[in-house]
Image (cartoon, rainbow, N blue to C red; front, side):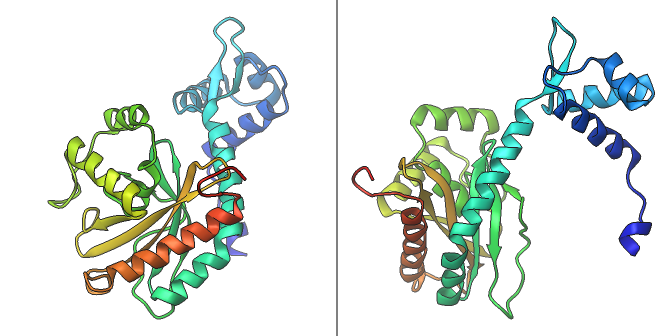
Length: 261
């Protein structure tokens, strides 16, 4: 009842109306077309179209002046679809990892050069971490991020670093390109990554990549806990659990280490 009484946001309603109109148009629509079909004021439609275009959700053909869906919408759709499939396939393995370690488990994918959380499983009676589905995180200072980018070709890694830099979150954050490359080489060698209070003081994370049938790291799994929960003594055992979980999910996705399926 409360949801029904809560007012919608008019500007958002109008933007969604425009997107739905464009979805039903094969060749796109011009500004006058949208104004005529929607019955909205021309000034409002123009502002909404400009905003959607600037954010990458719409593209305007300079020759025809027609608006069409931009690449960002397709990116979001692909992310949502792949994320749903991954979550479904990974769910039992993530729950098992929580049971084995007693720590919060995350899964993320690489989207627009950031690690995006698509799954989170928490153990009962534990302090809640400030993470949520859809949260976007830097890749150079998180266990999930490092696991996702460790397998990237060097030129792609250079592009990513050039575009986003290495923002420092605290004094532990890796802020050197050379140090990051050394760190990622270690991830490849060991099969897992570590965020040792690099993203947030007092927290440690261990991540491992999830591969698809083409041997591409399409996701990463991690466990996260306080520095009292993840210590030098139990880190090797915890890392092995994370690696085994990532490997199990990879096998379900058709990954065959050392050869084609």
